[in-house]
Image (cartoon, rainbow over all chains, first blue to last red):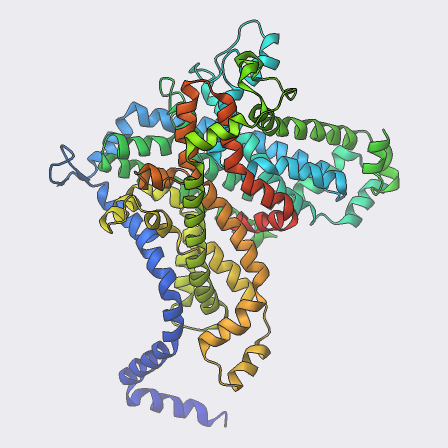
Length: 316
Length: 289
């Protein structure tokens, strides 16, 4: 049997290799047909609104209209150049970087604190978790409406209770040096409870017996955190950081409601810039070029984080 | 101190004397109170009569003469019933179509073998990273070309396919023993019948988890409906609230703004307080979204 096989194989394949491959492909394709039909509805919308949209961004970024009614004309990389040369765009990028770091770091640190404090389940910690999670549920627009009053000069909540202690009352949303930090507060308030959930889930993976052993060896709370808990939470950190950065780019509704990018562009973020170009200036070319740059940045970020995760897993 | 002892009752005996975890807990309690202040202000300000004046607006102590005037004003100025209906239509419409698309696609990935499975799987996976909100410009022009500008269908359409939901359903379907399907196969059930009568009923927890994530996120969507919707009577709650806030801000009617905000978030908050455990576990799975 084992001797006969090698002899039989070449004969069988040389007889009609092309036809055979073609036939095999058709039968395999026929067998796949039900799956394709099931996937069709999803693929249709993915093609229209995700992949097709990316293609259109790519093409639109290469064209320009002189006036909103003029015919489009091919301009190559001019739109990209124009966006990069636009101080409003570079300003928005810098603001967005400050905003990303200034929201991601505090909200992740707070989330870790909350998770560590509330990792044991009992009535008190469940109630506290719910309280910290409430802001996650509400629309950013609603949060903005509440914080608009909190930051209101003189009569607002902040000035009423804390502002009295300061020598000069700052205009939280009206001062270009402060406004960006004021809107960061909203984001931290809204997202810390969300990230807390991931740390709570991550803490479940910390082995109880290792903690106990460390404790018996005389490791205090800080040592246990530093040498057992934090290493165990590394994947959670990476994952939450990516989400926090994505949120910093995409979750900008409060800029629309509260500041409109002002005062003097100090709270202008990238997505708001894109919106302004498209809706207020009807400049689809520039809006698409800015979208393209942002997409490229975000995709390389995710690719990078996936690679670090893959490397980590490969090394472990 | 008795509270502390009770909270730390089930921690290992030897660690109960440690002070750092208690400090951390105390700080968390303090911050949780701070976290609730905006909500507290919203409720107190909603019930505060306008006669208290603007200077008492920030007072967190409830007014002694509570009134529902602010709610009435917001209800009349804001057209909130219409906004609520629109948001409900949008969320329900998206969810219903998503249920169909994610069930079919989830089943294909879980149980069928086909040419190009890996490639198509990656096509889905990539959608998780391409944040749809960034594609507002090209999607707006597509919606306009389809003649759906200023329609609720236009608001819903980009969300009809969900990679997150597909993965969730794939996971749920893979956990269902194939013996059940084989039995139905012997009885002559067709593919769609098997999905409908075996896979779907056994995956209800995953459907409800997905429904929570989908409805919360589309209830809160703002930028996309803001761009698609033009007529005031088609605005969803978020867009309506932002317009309402802008108008009321001019007249310094903060009590009315608080009342309007309360009306917008109350449905979600009440649902959350009832199904708290479900919400929390759903949001943990939503991380991969």
